[in-house]
Structure formats: structure tokens, C-alpha cells
Image (tube, rainbow, N blue to C red; front, side, top):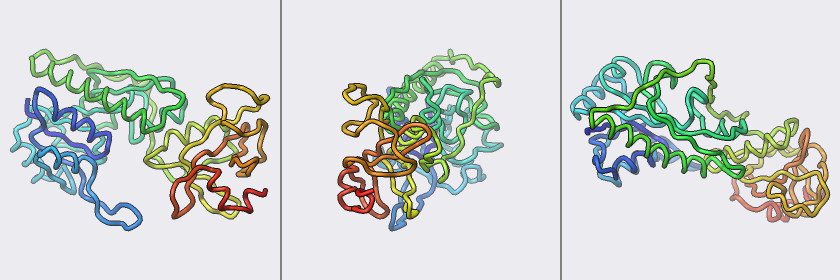
Length: 320
């Protein structure tokens, strides 16, 4: 089966590698987004899918718009039986939608969490399960009919990184199943999505990243996990400094001595005052309700470090 692949992110790069290593053979063409400035130096860098396609030796194109006539002609020239899209990051429009059979690998159990950030939003919402859906791409936002799904439990310690890794493996598996069924002439049946169950996973904004102490600690602990390691949560100190937060844990209000895994190790139990403070060498965020211990933080322009190391270099906060 001849496949053209459209994708951009690290998640999509994992799907591409799984597809390239399958018995059906790799894609005949990969399209991804152009190189963009990244990092503190703002040097041009390729998307993960571009790097993976080059490593695999697959023909690669990086057009400004996949909907341009010349790009559509390049796709047609490749003669695909199907176009596979995964985390491409740009809108695919008519007439391309009608010119090809297009399957989308979407990391949620549709219709829940349509949109840009389904993995992050599932963790942030405290969902017990999520998954991957193989759907036919249509003009609507992730609204096309679904043919196959794979479900995955969200563990209490899952970060974006750990959950996305498992979902990418599951997505590769069900995508190959869908392609194999189609190649045998018995494609999996498509079913329209139930509009009553629709939720939207909006793109993560700067406001979403901020740990607001007016919110419950349990919600903020999920937020830290949902944004690690690719985006990162932040907390505002009294002087306005935004401190990056890479890992955090709930501080149980009960008496000490508990062995519960969700309790921050070593810190004394009890509600911390609102905002960021230090207690017994631990960095705490007092919430409403609850207390979050900030375990791994990153000062502006610095490297990530454990909270104890941070406090040793920030005496005024440590003495509060």
C-alpha cells in the first residue's frame, strides 16, 4: 500500500517510524512544516518528523501550505492509496480533502478531546482513561467518522511524556491494523461520532501554564504533569519572577508517617500559607485548598534543579 504521511511533532515522528518499519514498507513521501526558529538562540530547527524522515531516507517536503496546488500535485504524483495525518499542526482544506483518502491518528477517544492538546487536557481534567482514534479526516475539527480505537489508562504518575509515549505505540498499532484491513479489501467500518460527548482540547496558552494558588492543589499537580517535559508549568514568586516547575507532589494534610505515594516526601504535613514559601528546606505552594510541594524547578535563564538546591541559592525565600 502506498502511503503519504503528514505530521510534525515528536508524537507524529513515532507514528512515522512505526509505519516505516512495518511489513507494508515505509511511506513514499513525507510532508511536514517548514523549519522554525527555536531555543534561546532562535536558530532554525527542523520539526521532529523532518529529522526522522531524513534518518529513514524517505523523500521529504516542507511546504508553507499543504493546500497549494503545486503541493497537491506532488502528493498526486506519489500515487498514494491513502494519506495518513498525525499532529500536522495546519489545516487541511478542500480540494485536498476530496482528492485523497485521508486517515487521521488522533490521541484521544473521540469525540472527547477534539483539538490541539488532547493528551494535556485529559491529564489536566483528571480523566481515568484516554486513547487513540483512527478517523477519516473531514472539514470539521476532528469530527470525522472513526474506524478503530485503542484505550489507555491514565496512571496517577503519568506525565505528558510517559502517556504520549504509550499512546504513540498504541496509535501505530491501530493505524497498521486499519491499513492492513484496507489492503486486504475488508476495511474496518467507520462510525459517526456521538455529538453529545464532544469536548474540545484547546491549545495550551501562557495562562494555562501558570500555577494559580487560588485553585485546588490536586488540580495544579495534574497541570504540572500534563505540561512536562515539553511545555512546562510556571509559578509566580512575590517579586513577579516566573519559576518553572517540572515536578510537584501533593502534601497530605494528615499526620506524618503515611506511606501514601502521592504525599510529598520529607515535608511536614499541614496547609502552607497562600503562595510560594519555604519550610524545613522544602519549597511549597499554598493552594485553596491543599498544599503542593514543588520538587524540581527552573529559574529564568537557568537549568532545572531540585528545590533544595534552588533554596540554597535563594536565601531570602528560604528564610521566609
